[in-house]
Length: 450
Figure 1 (tube, rainbow, N blue to C red):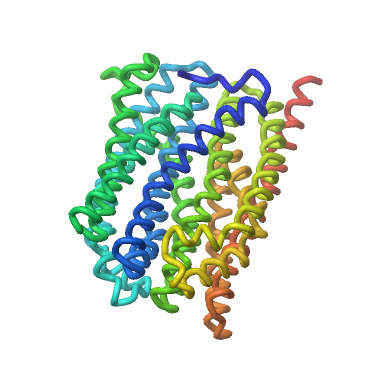
Figure 2: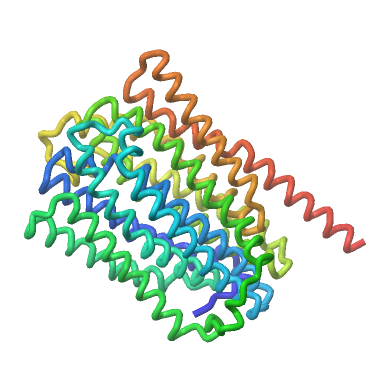
């Protein structure tokens, strides 16, 4: 079912699209969350640390795939908003070529450099074997990760945020069941977690593909749609690559921080990992607002409705501030108890590390949410460079904090300050550029009226 976002109340449209997208993100986070819970409870702290230490690395890899597929879908959304369905199908077909090329190159390179990357990240010797085994399986399954993200991005570009949610719910339940089966029953260790994740993601990708084939006549591609078009590929890459780099640059910053955290040992790695998993659940609402505003802006930009773009961004900013306040209160009062999902109460160092992280960063959630708003709004308008520049500011801020901590001999809490510094820094180029572009469009519209 398509959803035309160029007409109707912006708040209602945004919420109607955001809620299923948010729930979908929750279930997508559920994959790695369940892996960590089962590993921490049934294998041990080292297993939790092994999986947890891969979070930033997985974000680097899957974030790149999510970024480029989301970028490709911007052109699909703009074509859909302009009612040019032939062009829309051509963009989808060219996206298929590009996704296959990226996945083949990434899988080969990452499989070769798996262990060297982990050693570069200061992964402790006691967990590096388990970590390498886990990541090797994840890398081998990148094809299904890319497929799901690509199919889901196309569905969302057409305004269908519900179907990817339903497929994720099904696959998340399967993932949880396979985790228990592979680890508790078959004693497969962290490799069992990885296999469960890849199989579940494969199922969600297959369900998306079948649904698109059966339900979306306007997406039925013909042989002519697959005729190579270099100019179209260039336009897709001009948006997709900056969006992918934006995720990757952010991920490189988190890898730098993870490398610094790894120095403190397995307990702190586990505490940081548990906190990260919980915060990712909080972060999903901001990601959902970002994905929604990208589609909303993309469709309305294609339809020439810049007034709706401005109103949609304004309304979303208010909703993000409310969500940030609610997230802060939840984390403030329940973080300690939620950490017990991963470990038992005897692991006091792990629990204390998680609590210290939340006390250091949770006050900064309004800035974190605003990053997704302005970054995705600009991307929905077709601008990829400045959103990527926001990622560069994040990277520089995280790197500066880590270097400063190492120079001054700081500890775990000081290292955690890298996140607030990064979130605030990312907004430095985003907000002024958005204001500049909207004023420019307003001036152009006023000249047309005159």
